[in-house]
Image (tube, rainbow, N blue to C red):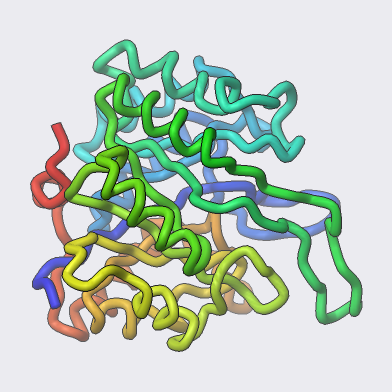
Length: 303
């Protein structure tokens, strides 16, 4: 088990403060200024990687390179964090995103300038259902929604990030993703040191493993022996703290934020920085200290 733990913030994703009469968390950052302020607080709390989606002032998802550039630029100016914006899906959530070129265009546009070049770029090694089963209503929701990531998409993303002097991050949604990453590493399309993110999810969401010790273990059982991969876990639509101790005890890292889950308890609505502070506390319980951004760069061999 490593002495250090890398804590990544997943700042906003597709979550909202309020939408369609539903309240999630008032502290979800939208604008570049809010994202940068959030990043500063998260670094102070112990985070070393910061992941975000560009959003309009009203929270609407955006592909505007200006918003990406402003957010990344301010985060890099005000923090020493490792920065990873999103790639964009072809699910209809963002207008006019139809091809892999559309998906990666905002990142490539800002990567030309060192002041706004991100450090990490994500690829999702799966094509999967985004529909889910709602236990309360006993209904399938979004039954026709698919998240498409073809092998051609993987290769195009990896090439684009390599050209932009960014490191590719593999998101593993199930055990087939583990095999895909193994092949991409063997072909030197993704080069060590590997940083990969394991997706666990709430019951009824079939794109990731269950957020349980068994769900996590199924991923790790299929890791190549002595792979040396650096891995972290994110929990979609549920609390990461249900598996955090197990992740840490097995040598993993933590990716947490309001973008994945609201983390509300009664009237309490935590900030991303408060979630990071709690993750640091859990890590210390098992004898691990948060890696600084400088230490994370060294672990991942970032420029």
